Image (cartoon, rainbow, N blue to C red; front, side, top):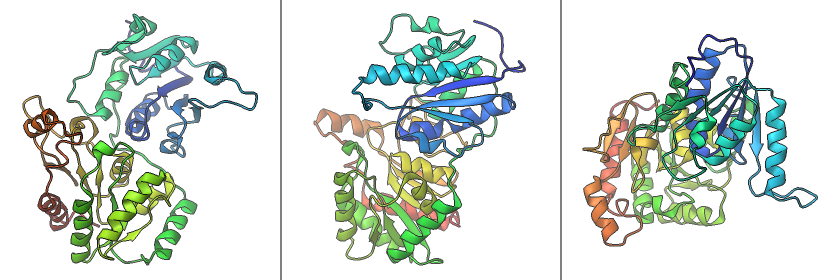
Length: 375
């Protein structure tokens, strides 16, 4: 391993975050740390298609390269053709430093082939290319299982001597996107000045979803507190249908804008909301990035890695890796994993989520509202 890169005259950096939407948003404190360490460098991010909105408009990033996974171009070239075209773009950057924030083979290979003199990555914890850890000049040890993903990305940089900066998430949207979000809210019956909450009950991973009747009950509870519930979802037709069923089951207490916001518009709509209620998903992290208090429902996934982030340690440990808790403005509602393990043994795919009660979620919402965390 080589010495620290901090303080070197680095002019060009390429960083790989080839993961899902929420993962890319959680990497923004790491990109901010890169900008702080190398203020004059050109920083490029390489991400999967569909995730680039998490970084667009971010002043810490000069260029975004998009890997169009599975796409064929007009001449019918395979994914190999897309990968080759991406590699050419990466090589054109003439990067001196390549950073791979994940354990994936593709990021490791592209780091090696980028031509960068210094290559920073993380030791693999699962099978993949044999001895790919040798692709790197600076290697981060395997991360602690219970460490938040924001810190995992920053740990990769720490292996090269790059310190963290401001730990806040950064998500940028334009005035045009704010205006469009306001227009859609108003057209749906949410005029300016009316207090509202955003509730996103869906995920493309159905095991993350809570009972529909429970979510409908949350909508009624919010309405009873004088806060208009706005139901949102991703654009997938099955998600939209699920969200609209839940809105309808509230008995007219909620309005549905399911599937009608872009990611940027969704962020603009969530930012002024009194509270966001949702499952483990990218919108949960978008809400946290905008400073909106979050009630997040977790089942079998690890809140220790993905809980809504505002720079405060959630305190998960091997002895207590789950359970309901509040940190800063946010509350995670989750059953202890002793119960979760029993549910899995019984063959329930969303064990843990099934056991969350409406009373527990209502209490979490009230806890935020009573604490004065709303704006």
